[in-house]
Image (cartoon, rainbow, N blue to C red):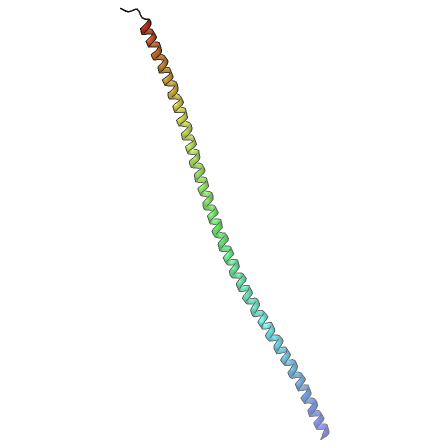
Length: 119
């Protein structure tokens, strides 16, 4: 009978040890599961953030492209204005010369008239 008792006690101890080990393993597994869950959440947060950044960068790129086009348009318009001003300047110069020529011609006619012997 004592042999049986000892054996049963030994079995009980072994079972207790196994139970503790199993409990520890369960805790470890639970911890690992939590870590994995946290990592998944973090990954999702990062993914969303990256997506947001990508959209923002795309928006910036579009705005920059728009600004570039506007600048190009402004540059062309300014070039056109410059040409028109140059043309106007030339035309005014031409008019000035023509008026100067007319003034000289009229001056010449006046002298011719004044110098002519009166009839």
